[in-house]
Image 1 (cartoon, helix red, strand yellow):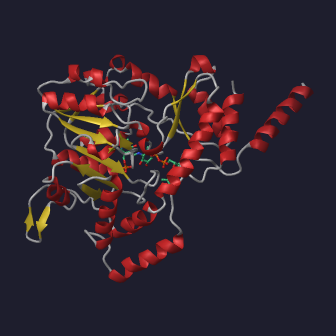
Image 2 (cartoon, rainbow, N blue to C red):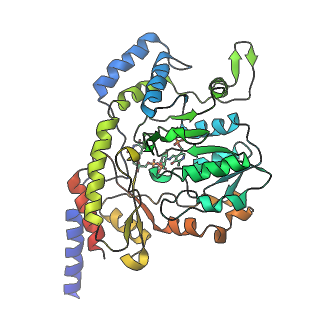
Length: 389
Ligand code: T4K
């Protein structure tokens, strides 16, 4: 008995010894030097122009157009309102085919437009919309397809575009995770009618909160700027039912400073990704989901999938185990959107129609991934994963 207590105490002690002193989160925001930021903020203070299409916002819009290599870009106060108003600007009606494996914002943007999501299963390699399963879901009520470039893995954009063309559907992408990604030598915003980007604090590029739409149709420039400003055309005319969804001057200044740091951050994340991959490569049952590199990668998340049969432990077990070491991984995107109570009545939300997505939510784990994460910490985290088999 005494021996057992001694063993348990020793074990607890060794865990505490190697436990990280500071919590390690799934991500940390990319932050500019506070003194650099301060001097830029001073300009805003002196101008006394804080929001409603100020000069900093215009400057950021131009710089982002350039960085994302797109013709049209409109800034918003967050990615969700960007998507919500983007869908509205496209005059969609009825049903929209989308993925259940996403952050709630994707489908909530449909809800706010009185659009019914039709959930389509995902394909197992990228966990994005399965193009082969879209067509049977199209009805006369379908007005669009809304794909998500999940964890920065682009959808099968060419195949989905062919379907959209065939049935005359709008094609919108939630590109919240794909800042700066190129695909087939084209910027990700080139694909579809419209792409939403999120600039939340947890994103590679952030404006604290913020977002943008990039889009093909030039006529949407005016419409979107009206929609994000209550539909006010001039002090005496309100022409659309809009929202207050403007990015303010302080957010814009943060964005302008953060943008200068993005390339270096991408390089650091590239090293971290490489380190994870080398430490995890021989671990049975651990599959790296975000494999893309260089220009093709947004370096937004580093995500693994745990195959319980091969690894011998479940994803939830590993998630909990890492917490004991002060490492806070995330089970994105659990729960599945199709399992939300308010979609219970939808045929497409039935679990048996979404087998790949139902499995994915039990296997996926987003690992700590940000430039400041030390390579030694990556090694320690991977050691916990390896030693747990
Ligand atoms: N579509 C997709 C596919 C999305 O993933 C998202 C957002 C959207 C649409 C909507 O875009 P936005 O409207 O948000 O622009 C976070 C973000 O809040 C959310 O933007 C993001 N996706 C989602 C995947 O992640 P949570 O609930 O996981 O955030 P939270 O607060 O738990 O933060 C995660 C970790 O980040 C923390 O454990 C620590 C670290 N953190 C977080 C914040 C806010 C910091 O170190 N500092 C911070 O200020 O949703």
